[in-house]
Image (cartoon, rainbow, N blue to C red; front, side, top):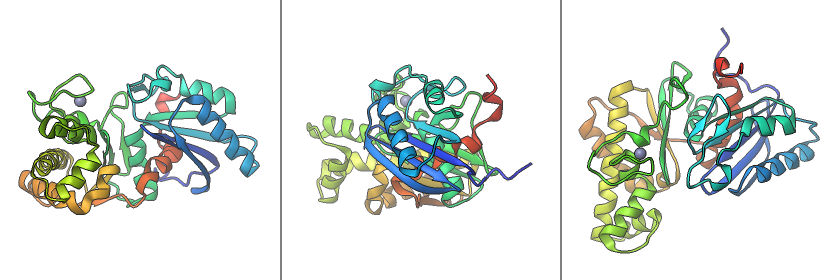
Length: 302
Ligand SMILES: [Zn+2]
């Protein structure tokens, strides 16, 4: 059996569809050669960016395309089911449409799982770790023994939808008290609206807390504690070598980290090692490019 951490041979296009920005990159031999980034719209904008990269590099066509998206999806069929954040992608048959246009195999997966693949191939290179995105939403990807844990249909690692408070605030998934509802950027903004009576972004709430605003501080502390609880549960379940964090809220890790880690230490036995991704905002793009090497082969036959 070959090593699962492969070299990304060939000409690969990675596409990371984000809630606000989409990143498209052309890779060869595991190296990012050229890239485009633009506000997230739909498939035509992604096609256009791929065509521009092919023209820039003088490539006729790519050997494979990997796509990551923050939405419920049918991975086997390569279809994005859609969510309120991605109105232009609802029901889009990503693998069929891009495959027909560019004449190559196309693979679609959850963006946080792609980020875990990015971390596996290009980041800390641990073989047992969990990647967690702490951003507008909370997502996760699990790597065990150097291989991605996909679950039966690709939904493994949806850490954001573990229920921590059954009577807690509503989550966009329809349940209540999910980790995402308690600790994500959206959750922080919602809690601030209720507690402070103001429409603030999570970033603003964190800034207010830094400046000593007591109510904002309580909102942030509650989110950090819930996030730490989520990390502790993941660690107790899997005992990963590392827990790797990425996403917008980790930019304030100097302020949020101590509070999160205090909760982790309180709720997990042992001493979980929590680190930030070294790939920054590109972790999902790198992972999408490595997705063709890691996609479950048995799901590609149909
Ligand atoms: Zn949920």
